[in-house]
Image 1 (cartoon, rainbow, N blue to C red):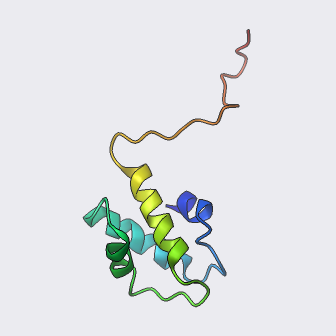
Image 2: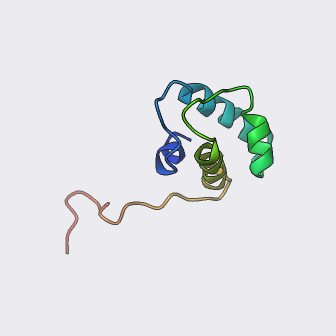
Length: 86
């Protein structure tokens, strides 16, 4: 979730971020594939004065896709085995 908030520019001053992240994780536990309205309803108890919530909603939906069972994170291209070479 933290990675998605960073990637989708959902972090502003940081004041609301811990609550948003915790609420988003709880939301995805109940609804692993929420639409935009469901995300907005799921985080409605947390107030953010810095954003219009668009990037927060995008971050939650992005995290939902990455957290689905069977979704695999891509390893960085530079990740290799130490000491391994051609």
